[in-house]
Image (tube, rainbow, N blue to C red):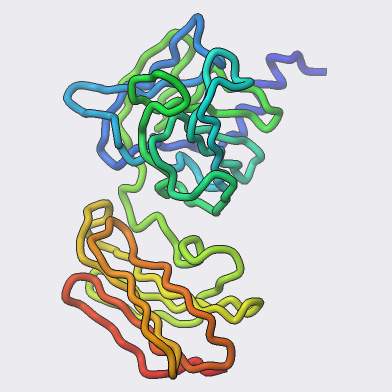
Length: 278
């Protein structure tokens, strides 16, 4: 029979390969300070050099299902509360926790599927009188805190503080149209744009259509993008603005009704005929 430490080591060994929870190229200190950090083994991500951490986008370090919570007072965590926080459960049963967030992309009590790099919130100091930082935990499938978490291939053991540069979200758009529209929606059509793609989705259980335009360029930078949906005989609803990753979701109930849909990225636009009438 393995010892407790051997069992924990085996559990940690199956953990997902984690990226930094920040935008590509960002460098911050991962501080696994000890003793006295609660819980022991969690990391505080803090400023490095001239990089200011307050308001930084927080991203999932690996794919899974994100659940959103809020405990804005001292709670059963001990001397502090997590404030606004997100727990991502990964495919191998491990979890990551992201706490003290200023904002979250979904309200408390919500959940959504995330890819590695999906934005889940922004850095803050909620839950207590904290300077802005990101409290981060890697949790084994057995529920224990990994006291030597590894991010970007760098292991940060108890008492260590290391500067780590993010390679998270250095590729394409981390969002999917199904993620943006929500549970039950499936893509039924799409149209390519210069700089992105507009998608039409349908929920067969509710008869609701959904349109979202995903960018493929200038990711993370607010630029002009839009999405619209118009049931035949009804009014058109449009979401347009300067967004970092997508416009939408625009949703309309249209069971058995033709719809016109489309969107834009910059000056590139698409407008469909009335179609998908079933």
